[in-house]
Image (cartoon, rainbow, N blue to C red):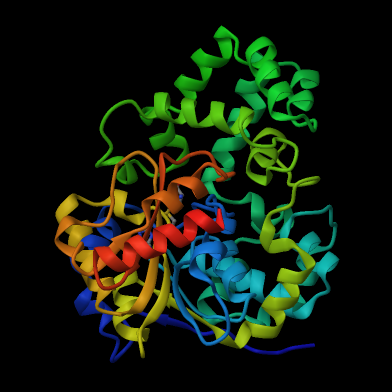
Length: 405
Ligand SMILES: C[S@@+](CC[C@H](N)C(=O)[O-])C[C@H]1O[C@@H](n2cnc3c(N)ncnc32)[C@H](O)[C@@H]1O
């Protein structure tokens, strides 16, 4: 049984530059949003895109937004050194619990404990795991036994939002039979037919827009502070993305869709729970570092020789354009040549700021192609930028990607 104890570096720790380097970007968000509870008990971004673009092999260093930990762990499993940062300490507690469970239990045991399968003895299992956690994570989980009993992957505010959608709204729109039918394997043509003829009725359109309105999402799903820079109708954009996910992509193997519709991942498990990934996490757990604070503080504090890849979730859309530009520049200071920055837009368009285009090449064609395969359908764009020597280098990469398909 492995007995490593994870330590979370805090931006307030003595000597940490984080406390002083948190400027408008992360600090502004930290002031507006309450970070005292789990917001995301799973990562709601498709890690396949990160693994493909950030090439997380041994010898490479990646700075990653932690969230619930899934995507940072998927990157870690390939052997890269990963620094996982989050403003919200409870998110780091989620990540830590995953790591310790995977290290100390076998695959089935870890997945059952976390909530992927049924289990009746989670508190007993937790009592065996808790001494592997940092003090802050242990304190959080000790104070929240109900989250453990129910399975921690179900304990986020966002997951609760989906529970309300699934329990109260969806049954008004479609019968159980129709919902199950949506998750049956079909080819694209059949999916389109099913969507048009069976799924996309007037009630679906109306209630979907209502539930995914900024008002409802702000109160029940995301924190309203996360919507501050959103312009236009949130629900319309999410509706179009959902339509694509239900027709252009396989529905039966999509873990994000499966969870939203059924409240479980059974039958379509997230990538990070695959046996090979779990084995990689066990093998490389000592290459993971956690940081509590803004991502720019993590970069400054734990940047070392720099990073080859950045998983930035959709953090740029939670701040105004000037702050996003400043944050982007701060991260670039810790980027190695050829480093890639991967991030999403949900509701606010944010790309590489114009002032950095002499140092950074947006790999737009490749990113757009990958986006068509993105199984998490809440986003309006996937962005991929490469630190390089300007347009010529970028062009070569674009051509290589085109030929690689
Ligand atoms: C950016 S949120 C997005 C989750 C999901 N994609 C969504 O759109 O609802 C994911 C995580 O990023 C963290 N976060 C947001 N901005 C951050 C920042 N500037 N530095 C560190 N963590 C940040 C949040 O605490 C949260 O746990």
